[in-house]
Length: 283
Image: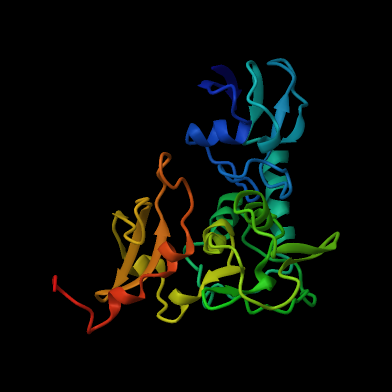
């Protein structure tokens, strides 16, 4: 365990965590995009900045990325420091520069990490009034829609797909502030775990095409904890229904079974449930 000091208060945290993990475990709000508990930290989005001090007497401090800074014993940080708050707000404004104004028609509207973090940072006004950068979208197959213009370049998708799912046909192309996340050419994603891109992405670049066909906002659906029936592993899931029809299946975390992810059969293979002529009792 380690003792850290956050805005003048003392907390006991896991010394193996970074500052972002430690603060989130305490219920303290720090916005973030590129960090994910299954993927670790890369410091790509710069959104989780906090002010770190050398000791209790230090009044100047310096900005650090909390996801890249260990929660060492005796650490002093401030989340509410004005410079840190302004920095985080400016990062969101920069990320939103080319983001389209399509929240009303985006499948992730109301269930969007970008929306939550924008509200958390206090960013409420866009000053950019010029032409937005645009990209061509790809056809990624029958299950996943691709809307590259919503991308904020957090790199979660390629990190998950290559490092966790061991996929080879999704990558990042380009350089600097003009990068593209997709396949070398249009085509169905080859990984049997590609559907997790829908939940890994903090915006709406990758969305559930099966849900889009019978779309409704997440707050209009009823979710319940369940177990996937597609194989014997027993992955934990959260199926969502609307008007008595199954519309979507999401992962439900279980640290001893499926962690944060599902296979594509478990995520997209629910269509038979809605068939009107399916068997209702044992034959």
